Image 1: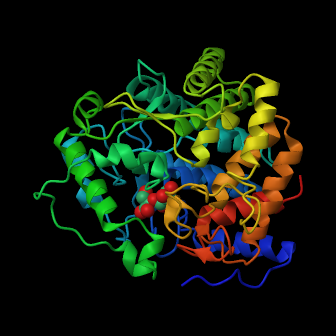
Image 2: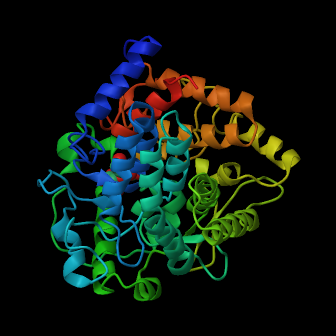
Length: 447
Ligand code: 9WN
């Protein structure tokens, strides 16, 4: 059932409410992504959480990322979930991944998943340092201590995950994109054949979200779980995974995020006197990632495409990933202005039926659009935040202001939902979602 957006809260109240959610979800040195649905630490959620926490305590923001890094693999990969020691009610649990049983690269403690997520951590690091309090020596020292693992993370992405053909970052599971069941992946997922030998499982997520239609389908879940079995068969070995897993997509959104985060991390490096060779390497990576996004972008439409690496097909879906070039910059102000106009236009953030300005996870104009189903239609505040950040950074301040105002309209009901109905503004999915609260704190803290 869809209900309209609830009572609107005044902005100072909203900021206090968001800070209270972050406090309530704090388990000491890590923040659970959501109190019931996601009782562990997620990788890109943790980076958004750190961005929000930076305004409340830059030291606590550092702790969030330091905790995430305790789950880093020896290869450099930051896994998408760092499991809490208390058995949270979430599936797949750590036992299903069995990472430490299968590879020495995974830490024994904490237990982790065996895939990764969008690398926005560099953006969080730069924001921590630039937020008032971030200039304190104690904060800079702590960022300095995180520098080597952060470099290892970026180097792993560059060596283990960049396609030698397209230069895009390859993902081997839809969960790695962070946009799990987006129509972006319908075609590559159609080629993931689930055999009858898939070990049995129970969907715990359905216990926490009343409406099944707000979550991925059972067919999606079978594929997600089957891919875990394929990763296990490859013993999570990077080369073996690339050679054998039946889902391999050059992810243009992740590539643009990595370009932006590499540039942000390089800027952070200059603030803490990191080794010049590291800063230069990150700057060069950012340029080459931006070029890969450019090569995946149709000059006529401005649409950026993912690439199914099993077939070579270019995949353009009506998702915000089409506008990936805006995240990392196109290098041409004319092209960029046209792209911003399209992004804010009828086919995306400015669709006339929208409750407020914001990129729907799938355009209402697309046949794949489902207004309440997860990444197939709802508006996700964190995605609005990311585009807001990029537009603001690249000087599109009016467009950025529209995104922020629209984002706050969705958020004003004070539920800090995981995602929102694009037409009614009703809260969907989890409530008290940490990253939603974090971007609210960030947007509502005067600069
Ligand atoms: C699987 C935690 C995560 C986000 C993802 C979002 C969702 C998990 C799930 O929740 O994914 O990783 O169980 O649905 O898709 O982006 O990081 O908030």
